[in-house]
Amino acid sequence: MRSFSEIDTVVKRATKGVGFNWGVAEEVGKNIKLLEMFGLPGLKNLNDYFNSLKSKKFQNLTFISNHNQSKIPYCPIISGISFLDQVNELKELINIKIENMSYPILFLPFLSRASEVIGKKISFKFDENIFLFNFNQNIYSNYFSNKILENAKLTEINFIENNNTFSQEEWDNLYKLSTNTFVEESDELKKSAAGAGLTDND
Image (cartoon, rainbow, N blue to C red; front, side, top):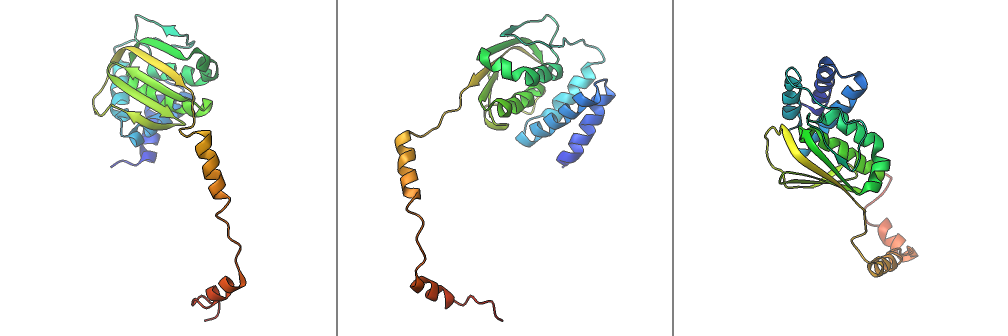
């Protein structure tokens, strides 16, 4: 099994080798390592995408709006970098649609990292696949395939507020219990502990 550091290094070099600058290569290295940690086929999809650059053209999505369309498939890497850069403004849109996204698996890590930046959950849907990210953790996915996904006709991104799963009453009750957990150590307890076989002298 290849180590994550080895994957990171080779991916960065390959990204630079196909024409991206070193800054982009650094981002892609982090992303593929993250996908592989999640058990998603990041390297497989990246390898196929890089091979496709020899014969196909891809559109750079540099400014993201609530509905993005292109006859030429969007590059998942440039689209992802744009999303991560603009996420503090994009979160106000609540819902974003991107049509004709190439290799959508490669777009996922940018969303995961963006959720940590804004402190909100981000859901990502395409075809029948659903992903939910929170603070850079893949907390839910119904995707269990190891296949290459070349294109998604429509992808949908939603921002979801983080809310507590418990009520104020439950919190108050637990907090009250927490104030009762400290017990002042009595002289009797100190003496019993001293005779429990614990000593600094050998």
